[in-house]
Image (cartoon, rainbow, N blue to C red; front, side, top):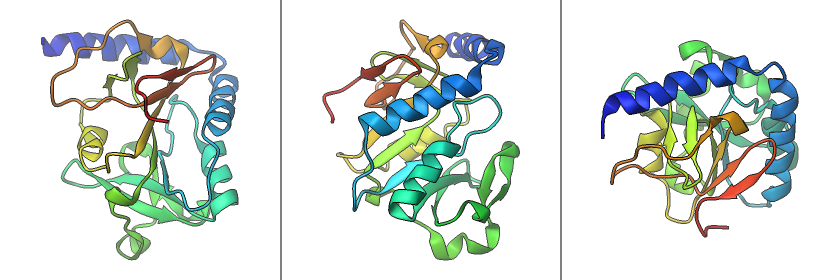
Length: 194
């Protein structure tokens, strides 16, 4: 696989996303579709990314998981290009951190760390996806490393606008796809996992 293929798709998908003038309305439709397709169950353990810039917005999802469960796991960037996982119980526990992304308060991180194997639903971003669940991120590999540590029955859901879905994303044997994609118009089942 030619690495420039991924870079070309990444650049084009980011440009497509930036060109949307109604991203907030599209995000609302995506959030509603996610919560309809995947109702929050008692005892479930959700990780939801905290959106930044023109990614699909997730504040409504975070608020709903907090309302139903009283807690939600959010990722944050560690210095070794891995994600730390934090048990959030209040949106006031977020502050601006790496890459302008809201992250958990540094003072609380060590006491609220969550092991990745305990997650059963992971809601993640991506720059581009295909219908088989292959994804391209920003190129740092944060979520790629996290995916390798999840339990086998964890449901992985990618959020994207329709304009971010490509016919084929270059992938390699070690790449792990998402199980489902939610866009403003559809839910795509990439695997048999429900």
